[in-house]
Length: 303
Image 1 (cartoon, rainbow, N blue to C red):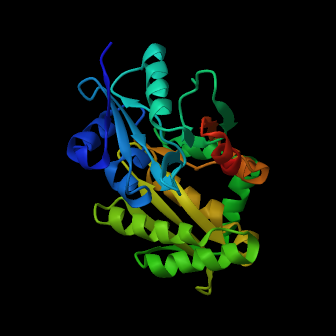
Image 2: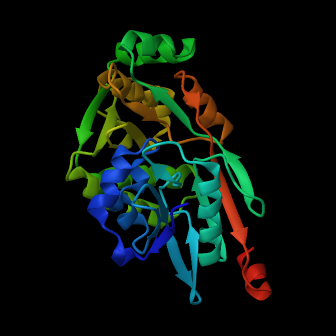
């Protein structure tokens, strides 16, 4: 069996890293060096053999202790390769990881976890766009199709925005009025958007009523395989007029009959899960994996 190498951040060849991530069968935008640099600036990596398998390590430090923590706006990470990975190799990866970090809490796509880890199954929903739009639309629930027809009848409209600061402020204002959310998340969203907009991999869509009144917006990212709805927020009128389904339908139609997968980015929340399912989306689970082998006083603190 080949050796697994631990590379510190400054030792990683990011051009080579991104080449493997893009070609990997498990590739996600979250594993690109650009994304990781934005959300986990000190990330390390585990490399198997001659860059055959990669695993990003989202490293944080507190009280002098290096540990792993899932970065913000990053649903999942894991192992990336050009072919399926043997379970025995995954076992060695976990052994290496736990030898380097006594504490960790990360999300991975792979449903394999050795003993000694706490594992929680989480839900993500995806929709293949490798079909004509009429076929995609036929997969919608009856109510979604009716709501989209209603939105078109009352002349809702969409606009693309490049003003990410303004767009995020609108999202934040709606979120604050409805849910508790961490302020730093919005800063990370702006950083990510600005970086990925340079390569045309991020865009914002805003919805308006017939009087050009703002209803809500959504922030999207895309790589060569997926389109990700990373953030979305709609005010009360936007929700009443079903602006979100109208907006998603536009994205799905625009990218229909391509190799893209639309990634709904969740969710375990029943209402959001039902919303995602109403577009015919399929469940794609991922797993929250944690361990705590810190010395006893610190172990109690991290709990």
